[in-house]
Length: 474
Ligand code: NAD
Image (cartoon, rainbow, N blue to C red; front, side):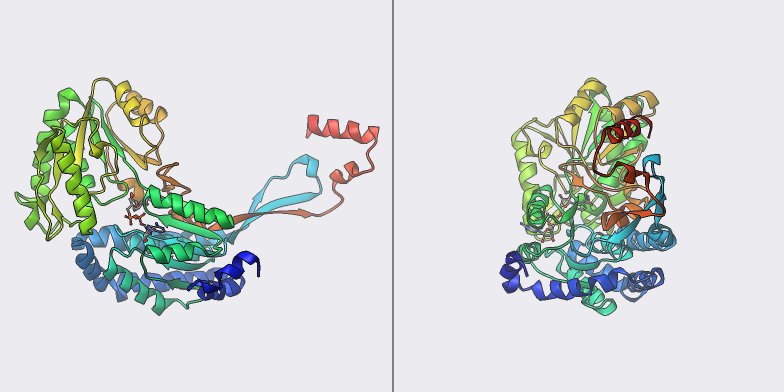
């Protein structure tokens, strides 16, 4: 036991960690068919056994509409499991690579081995999807896992704890409920990999803690994802998708379009279309709609209220909505324009149902505006001009992009999902998730005499010449 670990004896989760660590080599070598069984157990639990209770828990925690729970939680997890099941045999295969002539006599390949004991810390906005999604990748890759879900969605966390305890043994997968203090204690343990989904600020805390043990990290973070509408776009079609993408889960989505950038001359037309689609989706009074979620906590409700007060103080115009109801944590779908650049809405990730509209004069100005901020998790482009679309993509950086749509890139398991710098480090989903939880172990096998042996000491003029020839020709 190192000094470091000696200090951990008082950590309430150290024994659980040790239990998983001591069994990890066994868990790590379980064959393909056993890994499939683990995935199937999770699939049956989500799809059948606990499905109705999951929907109920989400309704209690977030007033999440049933269809949204089905599509953005259950379907996403089941999709991730099905994708992993169809591809796992292939992912687990050893991957041969070519070997340079200078290494004649040997062959090379790499294998994916599990990272080991991993920690998954998840947020509250899609509590099941963002906990079980990474878990699918982690167990597909043969890891042992401790999960810490969010304390904000208590009904969901409690149910996830029950699901995990019923389908896994504690030395394979365990779930620990708790507040920030619990996260802090878990982060003291020498995990091999930490998969964190949450805010950039907490991401920095996680990365610092990981550095102490040189644990690798995947950070799935957030930020302000811009939506750029160019003059060639179909405004009504853009509004239809933006209103859906912005107000799903009441805007509490990491890839939600945070703000819209549009040419001044198109603004009025766009706002009219937005009003039409808002009415279509949520009716005259969204408060009575079964299709619109609520804000997760009073703290977040107050945060959104402060944003609106700040914007109004700085002479912003509320184009639609602006209604707040503290008791039910209801914030109506809101569109704000005429924002002063000092408005907090233009600086902090909104993570709620408020859509600021920012106007620009030239496309170059819009690109400059995007590049003046942190690199976003998503950048959405609405344009029917291929040259301009390419220009926007080439001149900006983002974790992912949709052209003439938003949010849906998240749902394609064949695409890597994740941010860049402030919006995240590393990728998840499908094979990218499997890779995040795996170590690519490089293996060289010597078959016959290797010509590199000709260059072993003692060195001579001839060997120097041979070294030069090797550099030149091989
Ligand atoms: P958060 O960072 O506040 O919390 C996430 C998790 O970290 C929770 O389990 C929480 O208990 C824990 N935590 C909070 N403070 C901590 C601390 N000081 N030390 C250690 N652990 C701590 O995030 P949130 O409010 O739950 O979620 C919203 C954020 O997550 C937004 O920024 C959003 O964009 C981002 N997000 C990103 C993705 C993605 O896939 N990239 C998905 C969903 C949410």
